Image (cartoon, chains in turn green, purple):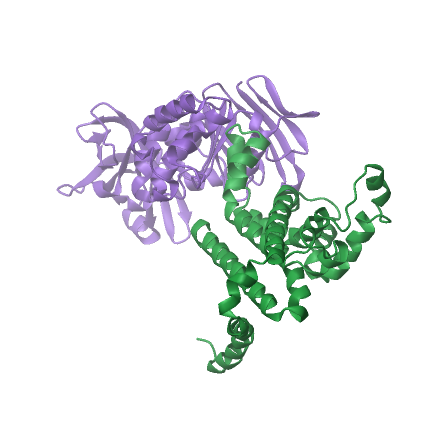
Length: 256
Length: 341
């Protein structure tokens, strides 16, 4: 039993979270909805968002998975500090992340000279969008996967090794399948975070239609010039978010 | 010697020196925290001893400057719980070892079916691990360990988490598949040691307190732990007319056949002592000569050779028991468990 009075603040909290969603739905000009979300600029932004978020999720998987395994399965001096730093983008204001990326990969950044020699121009390109999204989304995958790895424990891995499986075989055939639910929900969270990325993107990548202007940037751009289009695109992002949450929840239940 | 293991693990206060012959099963008995699991971890390559060597069939696995990783040792581990990989079916679980050692999918599946048959679990091949009972799961785990064709098998209390009802059958299966395999069996069950092991090592406080052939250690225990667990009465012999050496009892499944070597086991507290045969009751009556009387709190343990009976002090006094007295030990057939050896 929980104290009855808890229901009141709980209801207020729920209303506070749900009411703005209802407000968007109420504000949408349904007669023009499809025209608005299929304009050239909208389609560019949506397509760019999906492409870059997918790419960012892939990068998170490629580098975040090994990172989670190293953090969960080994111990070395300074590991605690490293873990905290890796998770920093979770709490860092994204615009600060964007500035940091600019001074890393920008022309006058830490690696700017080396990249320029190689003829690579990162800032204000689609690559910059992907990097910004990866920067903010990676910790979601690492946290989710490290938790799954710790919960799964090492007992199955020990058995597999005693049956003659080399470390790579154990990783591929035992470790990864066992943490698949965590891997899936971590990827979904990372994808959602990448899709919603705004601050780091606009700082590091700018806002150029079809190149760096993702859906959130497009909405921000339109909110004064074309409110109806901004609201329509916002609803698109809400729907995507709802789908993502539903998918992550179902994965968690069916696999976990 | 097939396995030589000497290890000192300072942190756990363990210092042991063991040898196992080719095809021999060694049981390690001992109280919790005696260092039994540490020995297994050293042999499996999960723990690096501070000092020591592990040599299996002439190949050094652990030693000063030598370290063979667990997957390369050909030492398979079977734990209390089956630990079947939950995302693989039973057949793929058993095929995991051969597959990891480079066998093709088909060859490894064939091997898996053969080993499942070996442990009487062929009908479980298409199940998922979560559809198995504890006993079935452990059977499959045995098949999986054997399918990896290990040179040394480590069993860490393999029967202790199982339902009592399935124990006798699984014990028989283990007995069959362990024959001729170099095995270390950690157990706290004296019956496991008696039925499965050729030799016993008793560990106490990280040291080997006692070692020798199983029957010898259990009949003449020198360490405190062995004495406590060996408190059971055991009569080994041949199964004839539903009795072993004239003692009737409840035979566990699978029932022994005429002429099978068996052992009858009963607790000293189940034994009553009479000065003359009670007669007319369904009890086993054994004429014995008292060799020793041993006070144990408010009880007296009456020893007669390798048999023992626990009586109250009052009952012992009334019977006027002294060493040399000829008495009758009586025990109900329902109190005697008979196992195939």
